Amino acid sequence: MKKEDLFNTLEDLKEDEFELFKWYLQQQDILEGYQSIKVSKLENAERQDTVDVMVKTYHLHGALKVTKKVLEKINRNDLVQSLPDTSSGPEVDASGVEDTKGIVQ
Image (tube, rainbow, N blue to C red; front, side, top):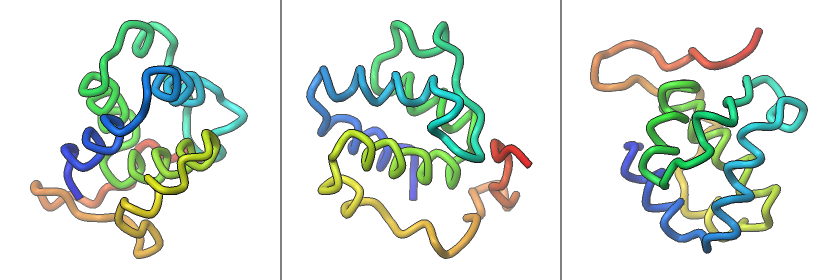
């Protein structure tokens, strides 16, 4: 799983779906277990900026889980199916550090 995979998924969203996707990222009560992203970080963000903010906030594995959760909320289950399974636990990124940050405990 790479950032590019998340970007390609967001590229498949129509503009109104993308705006709704960003709105969900800002909602504290919807992203159970994950912190919301401040409006100012996403207000004028394009798709690649949104991916960067998500990965910085949740790390890659968390960004994948959040992406799937939001895609389900906006009824784009077709895109959920195209992403890798998240049930296998945290992935290890290229630096060898386990990806578990971004989860509120």
